Structure formats: structure tokens, C-alpha cells
Length: 177
Image 1 (tube, rainbow, N blue to C red):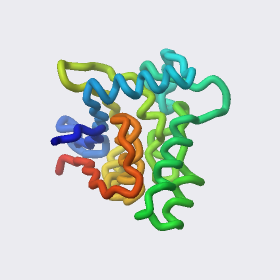
Image 2 (cartoon, rainbow, N blue to C red):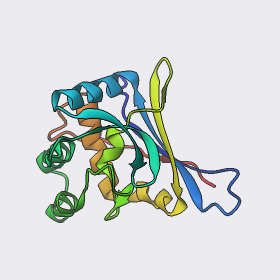
Image 3 (tube, rainbow, N blue to C red):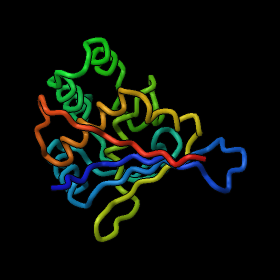
């Protein structure tokens, strides 16, 4: 049985000859996005349109009413239950990860969890897609151990799967220049 999962893809822009910008694409299955959307609505998040996504993009996103960051709390809790992550890594993630739609995509060398609250820009019969174009130095992000732990947690949430004490391999794809 194949379990589909949230994907993050980094692609250099072909037309950018200096290769200083990269396309960041988040891909969900339609079911994953529907699960996340239902979860956000059950938390009381509201859908809104902004021109300050990550302080520079325009789009639709789910936002919190108040200071509670449900997604951040859930991701940190899932990572805590995993026995495979060292305490120092857990402490770094729990103390430094952000879930703030108004902050940059990358904060403290961690992906901003708010990227998973952005409404996909398009969907086809099987997948939903969100794309951003940002600085190419982000292309090194997939090789951090923290990103893999965070994606494991988002995968668990989006697919409604309990991954406690289970080994999972998370792939984050980059396209070589």
C-alpha cells in the first residue's frame, strides 16, 4: 500500500540565469488538503486573503483568532513522541519553530509552518499545489534533519496517521541546476 504524503519541491528557475531564485512548491493529495482544511476549520481558523503572506506574497490562508498556534503545538507534540530524535534537536525545534503567516518562509533555519495553512493555488483531479518564488539559498533547506522531522509530523496530521514510535522516511526533492 502506497501512502501519499505532503511534498516539498525546490526547483531553480530556468529563466533565472544567475540562479539566485528558486521555485518552492508544496504538493498535497486532494485528500490531504481536505483533511487539513477540515482540521483548520475545526480549530476555528478563518479563511482570509492577504498581500502579506510571508511578508511579501499575495494569497489565501487560514489564520488564527488569538495567540494559540494549533499547528505548531501539534507538530511539536508529534515530534516529542518520536523516540528517534535527540533531545537537543527537539529542543531546537520546539524553541525556534514558528507558525506565523507574516514572517518569512524560513525562520531560524526552520520552515515556517504557516506554509501549510496557505490555500493551494490550484488543484487537479489528484493533487493540490502552492508555489512561491524565493531566494535560492533556501535550496539547502531540504538537507537539514529538522525539515524531515517537521514533514513527518505534517504528514501524520494531513493523513490522520499515528506515527508514534514508527520509523518513516521523508523525501524532500530538489531539482539539480
